[in-house]
Amino acid sequence: MLTINSLESGYGKIKALFGIDLEIKQGEIVALIGANGAGKTTFLKTVSGLIQATGGTMSFEGQSLNRLAPEKIVNLGISHVPEGRMVFTQRTVETNLQIGAFGRKDKKAIRQDMEKYYEMFPILAERRNQKAGTLSGGEQQMLAIARGLMKRPKLLFLDEPSMGLSPVLVSQIFKTIRELNKTGLSILLVEQNVKKALKITQRAYVIELGRIVHQGNSCDLLDSEQIRKSYLGEV
Image 1 (tube, rainbow, N blue to C red):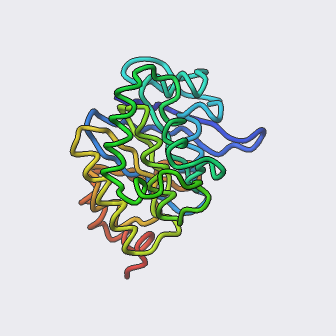
Image 2 (cartoon, helix red, strand yellow):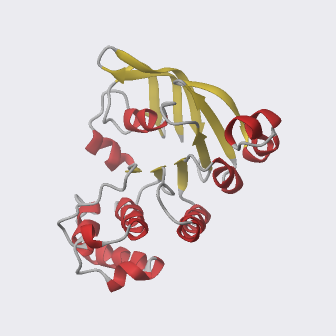
């Protein structure tokens, strides 16, 4: 579905990714884990077209993503829920969801999707007329995910969805991610909560300083002594 070969990118003269190879198959949920500054967000932004790749190839369902504008990548079926939620704080919950469906012409189906995500996240239904900036961090994360789904993506990028949330909300968000994957949606999960990420994904990649240093089945990585020492704080 998504095939990345020898990907390189960065910020001006500062190189951040060094020859990344990664793939996601249809229906998979895959984790990309690593410490702060490892290159996780840079990777997502590069594949989403927000940062230009300086080397390597990216393809989605056989179509090259290199040099495509972000909106064209979204229209191909990749939706990116960014780190920090990035909701439109001065707009209502409902308007944020409508923005997520930008470009769709099927008004009846858009309304049906909105009601589906209101059912998935009942608190959003209660607050549909509130400005997004008045929501709690957890509520904003729910809104960001729902907004990302409004385009009906085939592949969803989730960047640190548990950041800053209470343990109860973290569990709720991860349960939602599992449920979304069960519908057939492919997901790339970028997450610092390594244990939870490995428990809900099938495969995982570990990135350090812009390079993939480990990859494999998530259960195997969870049992790896090196991963447990480096990322789970276990000895």
